Image (tube, rainbow, N blue to C red):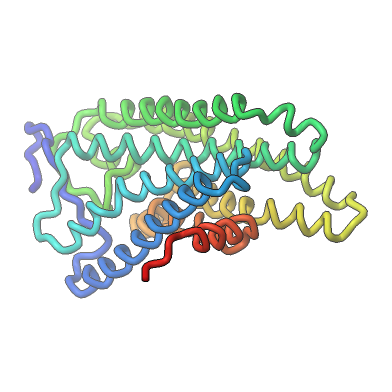
Amino acid sequence: MSQTNQTWVTEFLLLGLSDDRQTQVLLFVLFLGVYLVTVLGNLLIIILVLADSHLHIPMYFFLCNLSLADFLSSTNIVPQALVHMLSKRKVISFINCAAQLFLYLFFGATQCALLAIMSYDRYLAICDPMHYSIIMTWKVCGHLALGCWVSGVLISLVDTTFTLYLPYQGDNRIAHFFCEAPVLLALASGDTHRSQMAIFLMGVVILLAPVSLILVSYSSIIVTVIRMKTTSGRLKAFSTCGSHLIVVILFYGSAIMTYMTPRSSKEQGKLVSVLYAVVNPMLNPLIYSLRNTDVKRALKNVANQAPSWR
């Protein structure tokens, strides 16, 4: 319900993607299907990486971390959205909204950092294979992965603090299906310029900086692959990088549209958020499993080793 101008908001009303009942039921079915595929796909990647010794290499270690971040990010948003699609009272407390915002930014920033590290890993493997095993030790991989998660916490703390320190009085209706910084700032009663600048600067740090590293890495990879003398070597190099590059384009494209560019309409913002927060976590394991022969081989090995029920 809406608050008066003198009353601090204690809960928000999430308006969702549609107020039409039939559309909400259809969205429930679609979101449920996407979430189930997301959970099964990402958990399968994690299990395969842990179970198959052939996948115990840095590339799949980082992929395992990415799948964990995808799974947690989707679980932070989709189950609540599903409940609200079937309920009349679509409210979320201020505390729960703050927690959802923090976790959403935390997992998203961690994914950004992980994708950049994965591109650097591919750069070393293809452009400097002689020193790859010397540079990418398990100790270094552990520190890099830990750094990704820590950077996610720091970025999220800054963005969440600058979003929620503002006074929220009056209208508490969020024209969205989860608590996201841009839509929350639109409801703030005070001057949001400082918060918007802080979020933009954090976006530069966690979006544009990793994108720059990815562009440099893949530019070097492309030059190295072109110089390869054998066709088989080129195909192998492109196959190991193709999946990662597709994920990078989908993830960073939607993330930059969300946090680094002005939205022309609320509906456009909702559609971009659906792609960024709901669809991308489902696509990542599908892209890696369908295009990666090592993952498909590991799945076959695990399936053959599983006990048969007779």
